[in-house]
Image (cartoon, rainbow, N blue to C red; front, top):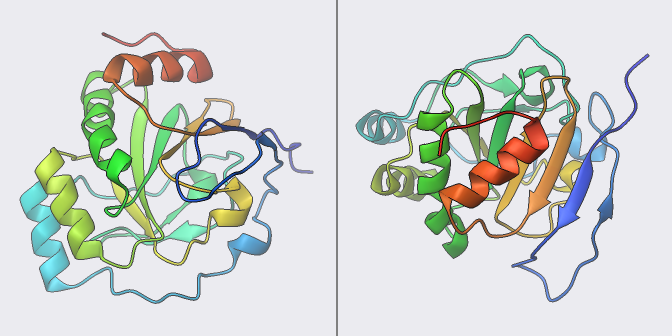
Length: 207
């Protein structure tokens, strides 16, 4: 029997809609309707994309062997590499939902990279390029902002229903026990991201 749903969605800011309401949502183990592959088909592994990824120094995607309450979907690795099933990843983990067309996401990326560097060994960081059909632009963005943590891609919006995504930026916190908490809103500094991570994942991180 699977564990009960433990995803708490706190809608702090919605950037792509006129209005939206916050609330809580369960994430069914194995995924719900959104677990089906997205309708958009985008080439995510080409020689050009591999070259961009290598130039940016982005780390390889790694499959997990754990269990958590993220949707049971498998996403491709941005710019080539092994696909990753989300509900098998180990916590503590911070999952950054971003896109190259999202202005606030661009500003946030360096904070996630700083978390990736400073929290290494305590908390993992993973990015998901969400609802983005220009992986070349996404990889140019991560190169320009210095991002090196592993990156997945969801060009068809597969995660929309399960994570109740109404806009970007967004972040999912995966606990060591597999619990998941998702927030949508703009992170204005590394200090703010650090405080959020410590609160949701019950860890102490360097300033």
